[in-house]
Image (tube, rainbow, N blue to C red; front, side, top):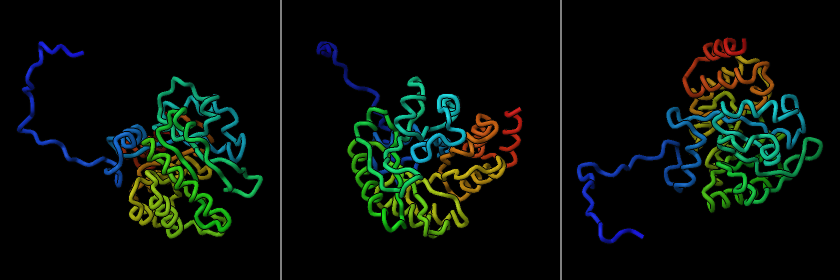
Length: 290
């Protein structure tokens, strides 16, 4: 207990310094709880306002795809260069050292593979996300898929309820329906649906007119890397997205399928955080990959 014989009156009240009323540095999230903001602060660099997430959750749909045959050999060495790791509970537990202190965006939906009809997914237990010390949870929304749209949006809404209960941000991952065009109109709609249902982060694809997608989404947008591109093209993708207002990238195949993954990771960070032009990022990649 405090010593009641030595209670001193306070002196430093800062009467000439008003309390700070500055907002949170990520758009649309100023009114969220402290715990949720604190977790987001682990994911997004405060100086740049952006993030470089390393995605390696592909295996829950695709199995041991190229570059992800051995997570312990291919991904774990890259972890320290990422701002955030996006993976499944199985790969995190089995292949990422527990001493790694990078924040985790946990893939939280599961249920189908590329061998079957996709998107009939369910959510894993909320206790798992807490046990995994997740800084964010991710689930897919299949906007435009007639058979599964309602399932994925219901799953996502439930996940947001869980996230709000425990102060864990939720990232909405926009899937591309087989009948939907890969254009700003579709991605703008899908991203907005994520935000309307409570997403703190939206992951979607870059396309022409992407500035409209970002402008109409009131929370941070990160782009998916998509299929493997030549390194310079991948860096151009990152640069163009940031110029359009994106808050970062969630790169997978364009990093771990690169001939020099660690060099590519550092080059992507240079573009996303330091404002390097694509050619400058590519020069960095070539220098580091020698």
